[in-house]
Image (cartoon, rainbow, N blue to C red):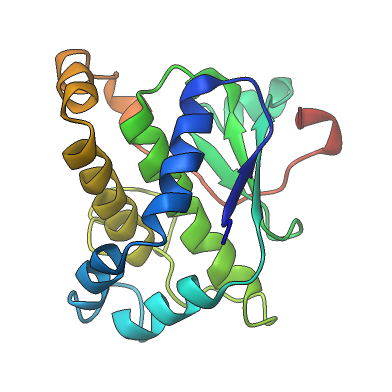
Amino acid sequence: MIYFAYQGADTGLRQAADFCNALYQSQEFWDRIAAIGTFDESAIPATQIVSKLRSCGSVTEIRHWKPGFFNSLRYRKTVALTDPDRAYLIAYHTRFLGNPVARKVNTLVHEHVHNVDFFSDGNGSIEYGHGDQSSDGKQNTAPYRIGAIAQQFYEAANPASAAKAMAEPAPAEECRFGQDVGHIADDELE
C-alpha cells in the first residue's frame, strides 16, 4: 500500500517518501511504536495509534510549500505543515529541501501522524498531538516519538547517510518543527 505520494523533483524528498512507504510495511516498526505504551499529550494508547496509522486508507500527498511574505515570517522555523482544511496533505517548506533524507523521513512521518489524527475518524480533533506548537519537551508525544523512530530506522538502513548528517548538522532552528499545523494559501503550494 502507498501511504506517501510525492511527484516533485527533489531527490531527497522522493527517497524519504519511498523509504516511508517501505517502512510502513515493516512489522518491526509498528511493534516498536506499540511497545511504547503511552505518549505524552494523549489518552489514546500506542497500540490504538498504530492501528489508526496502519489502517489509514488515504494516500498523503507531499507538495512543496513556498509561503508568501507574511507566512514566511510566521513559519520561518516550520519544516512542514499540516492544514486542518486539506485532508492528507503535507506541505514541505522549500526552504528546508536541503535537509538530509533522515530528517525528511522524520518530518514526513511526524506530519503523517497529524494527518491521520485530524482526518481518519472524521471528527477533525487532535487526540494524539503535541499540545502547543513549541517543540520543547515534546519528545514523548506521538508525532515526535514516531517520527524519531522512523528516522532511527532510516539511519540503521543507511549508515553512510546517517554519518553524513551527523557531520553536517543543521542550525538549531532547522532541527525543530516550529509551528506545524496551520492554513496554507492555494498560491503557496507548488
